[in-house]
Length: 113
Length: 115
Image 1 (tube, chains in turn blue, cyan):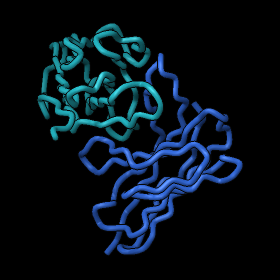
Image 2 (tube, chains in turn purple, blue):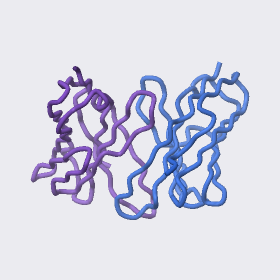
Image 3 (tube, rainbow over the protein chains, first blue to last red):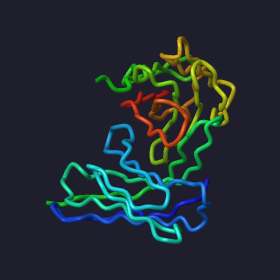
Image 4 (tube, one colour):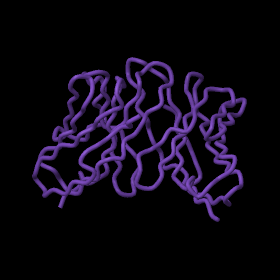
C-alpha cells in the first residue's frame, strides 16, 4: 500500500471548516483513499473513502486531486466533538487477502471554541 | 443496533501470565480484524479472519500470540507468558466482508497492562 504523509497537528475554530491535507504521491491506480478518525479513548471510526471522484457524506467531503497524488478531507462545520486524530490511509482492495488497515501517525486536530 | 463489543475493557496482569481478550463482532459480519495500539504508537495490524479461518496472521508479533474465531462470530486473542512490552490497547474490528470497499467498525478496545 502507498505511503501517506499528513501534518502532525492542526487547530481549527469551532464552526469553521477544517481542511485536512494528505499526500500520497506514490498511489497506484487501484488504490483507494480512506479516512478514519480516532477520538480519545475510542476505537477508530470510518469517515469516508474515494478512488478518484470527489465524495461527500453526512460527515465530511473528500477532494482528490486529478493526478490522485494528494487529497483533502473537509469537515464543513467543525464542532468540539470533532477533536480527534485523523488518519489518511491508501489501500488496495484485494478480496482474498482481506482489507487490513495500515495506520500512520495521522493528524491531531484540535477544535477550539 | 449493537456495535462491536470487547471484553474486558481493562485487564491488569502480571508478567508471565496468560490472558484472553474477547471480541464480539457485529452480527453477520464475516470479516474480523485484531489491531493493537501501544502508548504513543500508531495502530498496528495483528490478524485477520474471514469466517473461522485466518488467511493473514502476518501481524502477530511472536508465537506467544494466537487467536481463534468460532461459529463465524466471537473471536478470542490469547497472549501467553505476557511481557511488559505487550501492554497496549487491543482493538477488534469487523466488516461485512472483503469485497469492494467495506468499512471496518471498531470496538472500544481492551487496555492491557502487564506489570
